[in-house]
Image 1 (cartoon, rainbow, N blue to C red):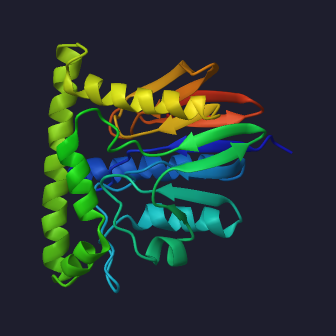
Image 2: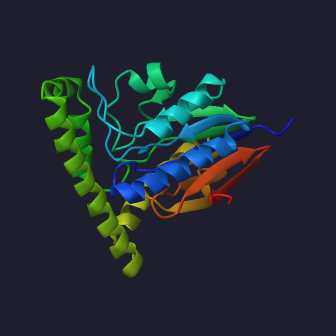
Length: 262
């Protein structure tokens, strides 16, 4: 029997780009899921699988059928899939849980894998000084506000949300280009990444051996000190340009890049 493995990926942002690009990206994602389905003990989707996801009581966003069908197949065979809320797909109801079979995780999770302690979260809202986003996050996740928004017709509500989501994603892309062109501790993403790194260090001090995050679209695997302990801080990259994922087995964690076999 093959060794069981634990898989992690994030920031696919299904629905972000044009239809041709998205079709190719979804095909690649489904191919990846099929390639891991038989040796996966557990799969962790660490936020922003969708570029925009809002569930109404009787309506969900159109599309993503191949991805959802594949996830359902894997869930039905008995493999647990943990779906973490990101900043683009936090508005969840019961569809992904009841119809697709995902275990919904609205915030961070402490879990133990083969004797090692993991803390897993998407990572949004951890940036230093990002007060504006933290306020918006509280407003958007407030149940009263979500109820009021749900009174808007789904066609209008989803259209507004998709437009806002794309602007947010483009803004992040612009910040990343600045960060890569002018790498400095004061650049926007370096500032945000620093907040996430400090958060990871605190979790390691609290006992975590691995802290797994997404959000910044940059694959990193860093040994990090937290108090008197050492652990590992991982950011998983994305499925827009990196197509990276993490895999843990027999005490070993690796960041890998997925390439479809011909």
